[in-house]
Every structure is written in structure tokens, then in C-alpha cells.
Length: 401
Image (cartoon, rainbow, N blue to C red; front, side):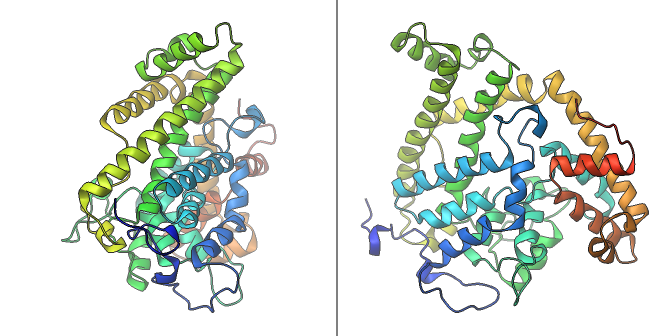
């Protein structure tokens, strides 16, 4: 085990005292470290508050107890902080990245993003990570001295690269960016303040990404079971979950269904978190990293699950895709949500004056300017606001059902 750095932080952890800084220089806080300030600025942002009424999987009106983007984000932040503490990383940076990772999402979950991406196909497309970067560097307008939140470089690179580098050392886009290229908004900001797009992000950012996966697996099973989209017998098709159900039945025979569901959820989280701590510690040790720069140049993700739990993650996601995300009830609402986003986009592009005056002013005169203003306005909407706008412009009786 590599020795501890000052304050109990591992030497390869991000250190706010050695931050690469902010785009706009600010005097230090008398009471808070830089990553703590980042976390606090994200929590107090308008975009963060809007997550309370943005869909995770279900639309907002289907029940107060299903997860929204906000509740999901809080759960991810809790898991990220727990993992960071166990691995002796900077908990506040991990939490800041976790809290900010979904800021760029549209209303109606991935359905809204897919629809907006197709609407923007001729104008650079739409990507929630790129839009999230624009929110925290440009679109939030709260401070007297700058647009955005003026977050540290470490938090920004975490938001952009928590799933890995975007380009290789030759500058060529990786994987998902290969077809259309890295979004221009990311490239433009990188020219102002380097985000090291060919390098891995900090372990804190990698922790946030893994926490997102763990939260999805556990909590979508929880929501799906409680919504009746599938039952306990069906989820036994996933061997990992079947073993957990058998364990619960053995320890608590005859336990009522709501408690069984919660016991499944908490066991999934516990198993994945404990496995991630052990596996990540092993990878870090094998890689021999001794600094944050070593992490960035490691050539692989160092935070992750063991092969056995990676298989369980794959099996759970495969099951959820078939039985939850493609469930007829969910698909029906998704189709309606898709139509709403497309209709709003067309209306705002055709007549920017149907948007509020400040947004209409951003539309400019070119097709690209009008499309981007419409996309930005829609992306910031909550589910219920988007539905309200559709009612105002098209059908006062419209409902998602």
C-alpha cells in the first residue's frame, strides 16, 4: 500500500491545494477548499434544482416515490463519496462530479436527448455531457464577474471525461465520438482551458462514473419492481439477483414483498461497492501510480468492478433494457415525449418569438443560431414545463399516459 499523503489523502488523489485552477482567477475562500466550493456552486445552480422534475425512467406524474434525476443524482453522490473515502481520494471532488454529471440532461430522460439530437443533426447534434459543460461554463448566469459557475479544471475534466478520454494521442476521437467527432463545445472550451482530452480523468471522476452505474442497477430494479413492470420471478433470470433473493428467503422466510425489494436493493449496492473498493485498490496497486499525473497517463480505467461483478452488471442492464426500458407502458409514454420535444423544437425554430424574450434574442439570424437557442431552451425544461409548453402551443388537453 502506498503511504498516505497529507491529511490522509492518497498521493494519487486530487488535491485542492494543487488544483490547476479556474478559468477566471478568484481569491481563495477563507472557509472552503476549492473542490468544496465547486460542489456548493453546483448544488445552488438553477440547473441542479431543475433535476427535481426531470425524468429518470418514469415521467414525473406517475408517482411521487419513483426516482427523478435529482434523487438519482443524490444517490450517485452518496455512493461516490463512500467509494472515495474508502479509497482515500478527495471526497468533495468525487461528490462535485457526481452532483454535476446529469446537469445537461433534457426533459423526458434519454428519450428527450435522442429526439433533440436528431433535431440538431444538421447543427452539430446534441449531447448531454457537452451541454452540461456549457451549463457550468456559459449558460448559468448568476455571478457578477463571469458566466457559468467558474469551476476548477479538475471538476470540469471530471464532468467531461468521467467515462474516459475523448481522443487518442494523435487527436483522433475514441469510440462513441468516432462517427461525428467530439462536440465543438468541448473542443472550444478545451482551447480556452485544457481539459486533457486524451488523458484519463482523476480517480475521483472515475469513482463518480462507477457510482452512477451502481445506482442505475440497484435503483432501476427497485423502481421497476415497485411499478410492476416485472416481478420477483422475472428478475430471477439474472443469476446474481437470484442468489440475493435466495439469501433473503433463507434469512427472512415469509418477508413481505416491499421489504424483499428493499433488501435486494441494499444488497446489490453493498456487493457492488465492496467489490469496487477491492478491485480498484488492486488496479491502483498494480498500475503503480504515485500521483494524479500518473493516473491521467495510466492508459486504463483504474476504478471498476471485478470480472464477476462486471458480468452481473452486464446481466442486470440487459434485463432492464428488455423488461423495463422497452416495456410497452414505458415505450408508449416515450413515444409521446419524443413527439413533444420534436414539436417544440420545430415551433421555436420557425418562430423564436414563441420563446421568452431573452431566449428569442439568443436565436440570432442563422439557422444554426436558431436551432441552438431552441435546443438550449428545451434542454433546460423540466418534464412538466415541456408538457405545459406543448399545451400552450398545440393542444391544451395533452397528457402523457
